[in-house]
Image (cartoon, rainbow, N blue to C red; front, side):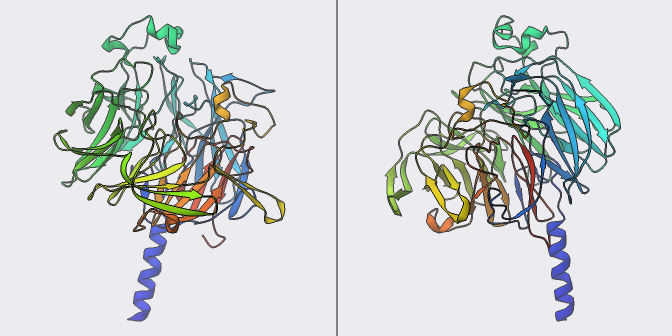
Length: 508
């Protein structure tokens, strides 16, 4: 009996670790998976690194893992320093060794800033269903390949955008890939720029919508009734009865045309709106999270919840007042109950929110705090974390609490790939950040400077005891990333401006 139990345990463990990461939001579509992964690592010191592979140039999409392969995108190589780019590469690597297997070009009509803190043409991650991989150049092209690199179909358009942000992550569902772009195919190239798009107006013909395509043929299946802002990351979820829907948002900076600003729940079978909820001043730059029977979002200085079945408001709680705040005071952490956090311009660093269990986690906009809202009690907690750790030879560390080092913004060839000075910043606040991911009992928060905060998300208190480790994806000042983490077979996969990285144990 004991032997049977042990065999069953091994089988369960193997199945938990065998999960693939087929899209940016993971196999469950919500950035949350069961299993385990490294709780501490340092690429700067080579700790926990299985392999590293140089990338052709900068890029931002999450690496996805399927059938022993890692798929990722990169802007095309440059022969020197460069500020803008258009074409990207779809790359395939061996997940076990890091060997590059093939690469394919995906062109575009839009030219964009490289390594922009608000996304570039590689911002949309690949998706892979076990037979096909889809690469998206958000500058106006999607291409589908088999796992050997044979092109199966493609689709092109001219993007419309009052802002070069592109926050939508492609979604896999029921043999379809769900993308986002405007309905018109006759737009001038000038429509890809802020000024060129503004002159065209705000008519519905310029709205961007979720659009479903058949994975086998590439044929369009449906276009969502509701518009989706370029600033919104839509999330696929399930009702308790088993049917699926997508929560999507409208709003954000530079006055995107889709209205009314707020949220919509979209039937994933046909694109029809189950409900549309106008929310004044809705800041769309967040993950449109929903879990169980509730949807959750941040607006102003509050956290709000809606009934996901109807879109009607349920409750709200301040995220700045009456909070438990744990701060670093010279040599130790101190916790203040019923504290007040200075209200920032926005409630969270963009796209850093995720719902897991009874908590809604996020990173603060101002200061350097990881926060969470208890969805049952309404309690709000904050834990201050270092903005950066400089790891030196000989094991020495310098912990920075107020300001990060400026980034070199160089690719693996040593060429700078950037235009905006703000790209060299800390990765907190006004930035389209990578999302956190949850693996088992741990939550991982990556930042633009290559820090990865690892915490126990179930911790009874969000204080120093909840913080497991301060990981890094490379040397301070030389590491830059706006890409999410992926987890498959017990290993973590990360990408930076310079390289693709596999983290794990030898036995994984």
